[in-house]
Image 1 (cartoon, rainbow, N blue to C red):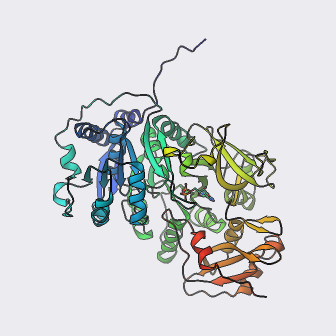
Image 2: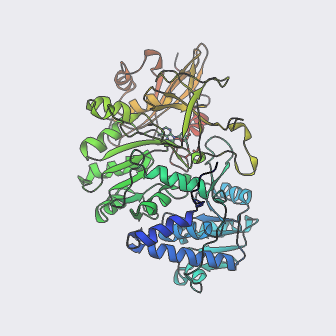
Image 3: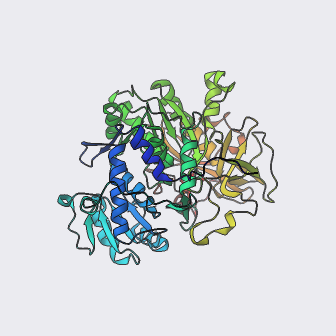
Length: 541
Ligand code: ADP
């Protein structure tokens, strides 16, 4: 017997409609490249997104067409996502931090029919335009006055594109499984692969994100997503914020410590989200200026491991709760979040910190297990580590165009490529990416754990650990550090600092000092580049 409840498809435009009707005056603030702010609200975002939908239909764009965006977090970019998805087309976020050749490869692989771009990327667009095989027209996210003169055909200003259209356009209705968004993995682990989100998966993701033990976003919050919309679906915030009626503050291209901290204060931001490298810069700025974060209540840190020292500074010095989260593009991207469960929340500060450093527990909608190389499930004892596998309604079941089929098994589990442990309370700890674990004497050493400890040393700004060949042990850890400006530390100091905190056989064989650690387009340490740089490295003795 079937239930007798309504068939109400989970479509993205229902989210922005809900925001427009029930939270219509709630602001969406954009920081311009010049550092001033522009104010909009959900009612306006909704009506302008409808105009965009109509304009796209008039240009022959419809179901399943991919429309690329090359843009920072701004109100126009947000409208574009909803307007594109509103006709059954697919917003495809391109990461401007990639090399131009990679962007071209991804846009051609996706078969994008149009490209929406920030004026800041005009030069880049002019350079790559001749190589974009399927792009028919370009939309600059600006008014006519700011339309860049870059000599490419079929270029129109966004404001001119939507101006003649009506804001009473009726959204198209279609199946909730219809594709709405496309984001390529940044290729940290090989060729970029496309992850194709659906209206249903993004809506469920947003519902998951709002839950108290996930982001805990409410209509009283002001959310500033530093995480760019082109990185992993903006962690669901572009949907979760309008779903709850939270005010949105979009920082545009200015992501430096000073600009962010000014926005936090001016707009009374209560919640924010970014990768650890962003917070390194922001915390340095606060330290240098003596400023504080009076309105900020919660910071979401994910995309790479949040070091213990960073969590401690946020919580103790600035009174900001840290929610350490793990996820990936393939998971829309929320996988687990480190809110404290009953019992754990009453532990001593140091013990609570032990939990906050872990990558958190999965929300409803994410199934998680660890397995050995033969796909046998391993115990949830907090000690045994294995390959982390996940499934759920917002987890990819295949890559775009069928790439990388090996990551998915017959039972629907997706192999994340990460190695980790699960404990009895459901908390997961990432040991490493599978290809970054250091295999020493038949056992595994976690590079992340050593890195996290190393950055607690007062003189160390950033650290990375890679495995280097060893005649007896196969591989041994090499610790690569960048010191804070004006600070000194020797190999002996650093190894003494680590001693007693990890097993003796995990202590790195050598410490090397370099000026800067390379980062990927999504702000992660580029282990591949470090391994190349230290390819011929021989350990002393
Ligand atoms: P890409 O894989 O293209 O670099 P993603 O943003 O999808 O881009 O990266 C997902 C990966 O980032 C995860 O598989 C994991 O290795 C790493 N990661 C994400 N969050 C964390 C975290 N909190 N701690 C450690 N690693 C993390």
